[in-house]
Length: 157
Image 1: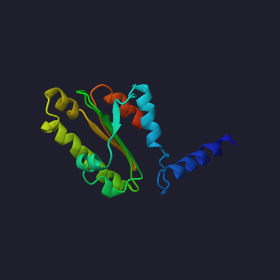
Image 2 (image 1 turned 180 degrees about the vertical axis):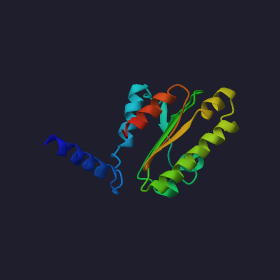
Image 3 (image 1 turned 90 degrees about the horizontal axis):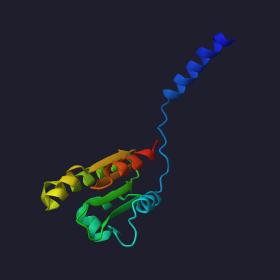
Image 4 (image 1 turned 30 degrees about the vertical axis):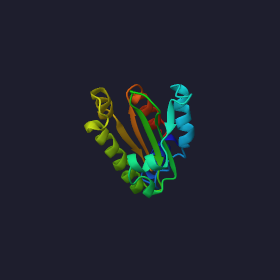
């Protein structure tokens, strides 16, 4: 009886792994994710502000044209420390790829002199864009770069 179970289980596993159905991404509330970061890194009391409307269009040109389902964009109100984060959910993976290119452009412009100060430009050079399906993150944080990137990636495991 045990001899037939192994081949049957192998066939079932191969069939499941070879499925043509797209992998379902988890639903992630980006506001909740940002708020968890704000709490963990004590970004309260006005340290971080929302990047909205005109600034969003100026700093990430074309992002709004993609009609993202969620956008969380934040930066320090006044700080010499680089700490800019953007989290976006798009309708399609193609839109997410376009959003990733827009956010990478922001990193490149800041790293190539837009950030003015050598320490700030170096922090921007370490900035990253991560795409997970229809979700995209831009993380440029001198103090918490790796931790935020890991937390974002872990949302999809």
